Length: 455
Image (tube, rainbow, N blue to C red; front, side):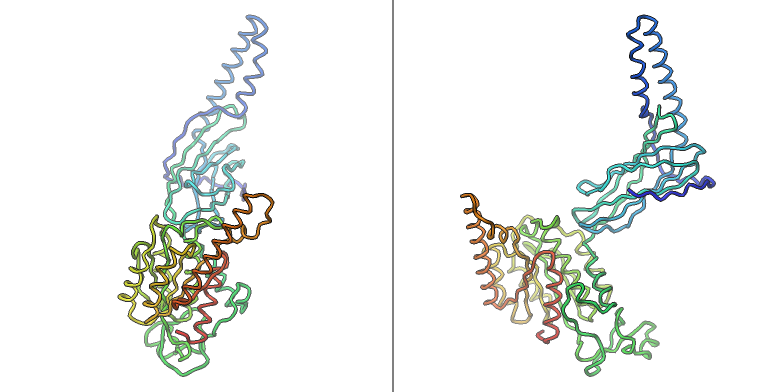
């Protein structure tokens, strides 16, 4: 918890019309003080009478204090980004304002969506008269999609702490959890600093400065200013860049498997989430280079399709199509995917297919469809290593059950190698990397294909 307090008195603000429900509850000290009167009950009739009088006075004092606190409940509001990122800490701030001339002790509990990891369940602070303060906690969503934060619950105590109130502030709020967008942001920063090696990108073709003039396109952030066509810019009332032959726009299709095998979790997020993160970084890099990028999400059939386009707005379209995608409990149908691609993507494209190659039954249908895809397009399968099998295959054997597990892991890895060999023979390219390195490995292969003009 962090607290940023501004304890200087200020005039009470205009009340915020937020529904608040208040009920009285005992204070922290009430039970303790009541327990101190218990020995009196052992001292005969006079002691019992004394104890009863003390307890009655404590209850009356608690009720009076609780009643006085009802009119002094702090004004509370929740502040956070409308878009939260998956699997990382997102900051949530709770702002409080004491509208009264009395010092208050406040404990805050927020109703976060189920499954979200919260670093602190309760936040506490002491509010000086008319003071404002801001409390902060971190929340890490475990799934993408739409979720709702519920009410804020405030426990407010006065100076005596005999009585208190529990105030429920109705601050229901919907948020969207998006894929982790820090990859594109890190890439953009590294590009501007000329340090792409710091994010793992080995090589990148600089735009402009060579080749024959071929066409014009809208300016993309990062384009050299020397390639701006000022006459076309003035005519169209928006920045226009001259494109040279060496950076001719190409088409990239990102196809993401959303079948049951992609629901497996690696590093606290699913394989599908890793694939989405990698595809978004690739989309950002390709669009920034002037290529057209499209999206296909498929399982037993095609679930969504974003036709290939260029320009910054296409990234937002693809992001909106991906943020709520979930893995389906079904097998994938690569035949239907192939039919869709051949019918809806007429121009030659680099087809990056993010899928899982856990066993032969998953990969054989893909290998059968690869020659059909390769007639017009350049297919490339992007998949993740199996860290569990790799770790088990190298474990030191001390007990019989460890030997069986190691043998099973070796068989799985051998089958996986056979699957990869079959895909290569069918004309399907392959990118394989650990889940955390998948994005950079995919971008590097894309840049390699671009540099060789293989498309």
